[in-house]
Each structure stands twice: as C-alpha cells, then as structure tokens.
Amino acid sequence: MGITPQQLEQLMHEVEQEDPIDFADLPFNEQELRELVANHLCEMADAMESFSEEDRRLTLLAVAAKLVLENLVLHVQLLRRHGLPLNDQTAALLSRLRKGGSGDA
Image (cartoon, helix red, strand yellow):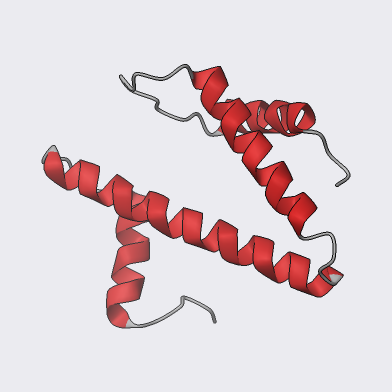
C-alpha cells in the first residue's frame, strides 16, 4: 500500500480538525483507537493488492458507505436516547429518505 499506518493516523487527525470526534467518556485512549483503526485499514488495503483498481475502489467505497450508515444510525439513536432534536442536516437527510428521494435534480 502507498501509505503507512502512521501517515494514515496523521491524515485522520487532520480530518478531525475540521470534524472532531466526540470520544465522550469512552474508557479507551483516543490515540490508541486511531492506531488500531489505521493499522486495520492498512491491513485491509494490503489484502486488496491483488484486486483490480476498480474492485479496490468499489470495496473501499462500500466499506466507507457502511461506516457512514452505521455512524448515522448511532448518532440518531444517541439523540433519541437523550431526547435531543436532530440537527438540520440529519433531519433533512432523514426527511429525504422518508420521501424515497435521493435529492438529485
């Protein structure tokens, strides 16, 4: 793979500057969690070395889509559990989904 786990960790940290992660009161060290994820993703990427470029892209896109969906579900569950309203962006997305539209023009 063209990136080391350490480089990926640095990229993750840079992305978090724009979109911070709320680790709340998890009983884990944030940096250790980043290391774990970076190592896992680099191992996944290395395992896909024999894949065609298109298959690699599709696989990574599918993994990213699954993680975004999982994050959305967990976010909504937490908001509901604490009786908090959805933010405008999440509410708009869920409204679009209820209507069965993708929002594309």
